[in-house]
Length: 154
Image (cartoon, rainbow, N blue to C red; front, side):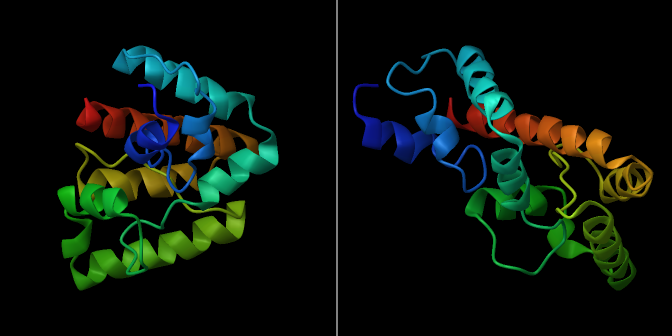
């Protein structure tokens, strides 16, 4: 792609509300999806901790009724998070609050292909992680989400 604006329009949303990631592979972005995914992940991995934290915090809470990016709406709806029972919704809200209180950022989980039960189990299990492990786990999950989004674009 020769046009930066077109490239950013297509790939700027791959990392939630963080077009700086796509900008980081410009002016010579790889044409191959897997190579592009690795290049974009390398941009994130090389970023300062505060920038990574901002990237994590750009993600919406799961099963939230808050306004979120179209890709997040689609991903969460794809696994039925928009159809939670009242008990499931209450569980997600309780876990979102506990997780945010413990770590200072939202729980990140690449939901594609998962069930609500699997997501809730991961939520509970990851609450036991130490903060550094959970920070790295969140970044790894963000890379998975970006991989799914790139696959959808190719």
